Length: 111
Length: 112
Image (cartoon, helix red, strand yellow):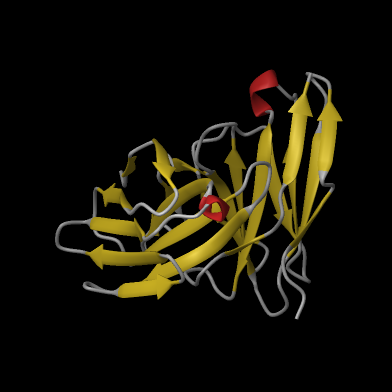
């Protein structure tokens, strides 16, 4: 069964600092997604990564995918308070037609 | 282009009752997936509907059932509500079965 693990589960970081969230998955996946979720809200799509070596950037966030290592990273550059949220990675395969989500990383950015 | 919509936004029910949640898919999308997100956890797949047929189901009991209509909107029904059913229920639509899913705003269900 496909499993997705994220670490860390909780991340408290100072504004201006850099950090990386890791997402490991257990079997071959066709696509990897990163979502942001604010408290009580739905999921906001950040990135869709489709192939090995894919890298996407939006503002202070950059996501990458290594399909051989079954690893994706979400790198945060010079964090700001507005980035405080919970971040989920999710994977799917053409076999399952469903998304399997990681446990989530709760990010808190303080001054 | 209208995105995915869900109703109601919030709902409070008593244990043992039944509930129906609704989802309107994005224009042109024929597939709807439902997820349950308990507090502090990631979303869990409940089931998916493709062209009015169930197309995959997660590890949820039969009291969770669904329906998809000819216009591809969908309902999630939960019978005999339990306290653990309290969660955010997310609906997502996609162009086809294996395309990217777009999430609605969710329905917050509280069971007391």
